[in-house]
Length: 209
Image 1: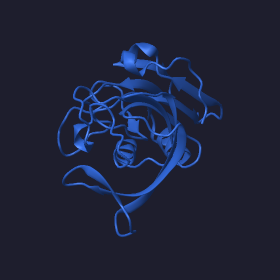
Image 2: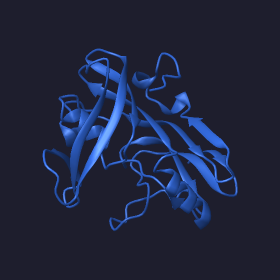
Image 3: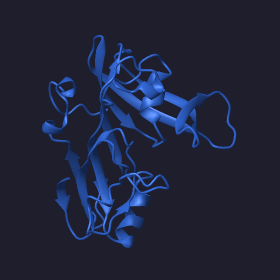
Image 4: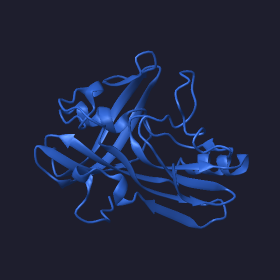
């Protein structure tokens, strides 16, 4: 477990692949375990198969503050390697339904119980048979990035669940987080390059969307 920052209110760390963001009924390994003996409170989630930056609150008060900040004050950017080459940039908006039994999300056409709107913007940093994308999330739906690109014919590399032809690790990284600290100042973190697979190294940092 790599911790990039820690104080009395929160910590920022790099979640490894195949570790749940928070404990659930599956009893699979989750982030509170490697962060023990600290008591931590998840305020956002990252897919089990993905890796990258996460922030955890260390007190109930900071958890309440950060959870509220998630509505408007968080900026979350990702790096993703997809199969194929989408248009150079764009905004994707869909209605998504998550099937909890299958643990799979679907793009649907009509609103009904359990359907929620999802929106992101992206930019192609490097195109080709496998394209490197910078993605900014405006909503945080389960498997959102994975299903929104897969539904358009650009599944993420390694994402067999959503139709990828390539195997290996899921190429999705929580790359940059920016959020307000409970004391009022703003904090911004970028995932160190050593945590990125070579194919996901951007030519340069700083691509604001």
